[in-house]
Image: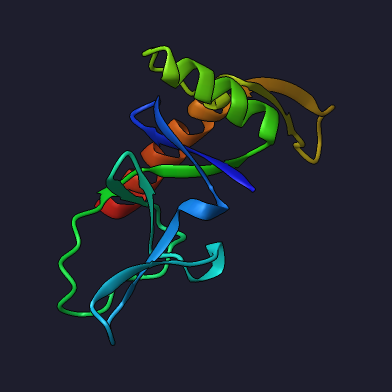
Length: 134
């Protein structure tokens, strides 16, 4: 399995199954692990994590950067690797892909609306903020 590491829409790195790490409290070491037990990934001697990783134990002070770590196919991994090796910082465009949403009002004909994932997320954030104010 392959992954891209994204911060603020910039793809800053890539990872594979060999890059998953966890803190081994018993020996005070960072060890290689699988995705199910990972607490972070290592890329260019830095540590990154996402919300889906396991939490670090209390008192462990490993510095990790929060980012999006998204599974990708080998072909995309190789393309991103080439760009990063050439010094280019590729942009993650996955949130710009249009999705069809069907507005299914019970009394009217269904309406198809095209929105990007970024637009949908922005609407959800605004809606959540409105509910938080109440």
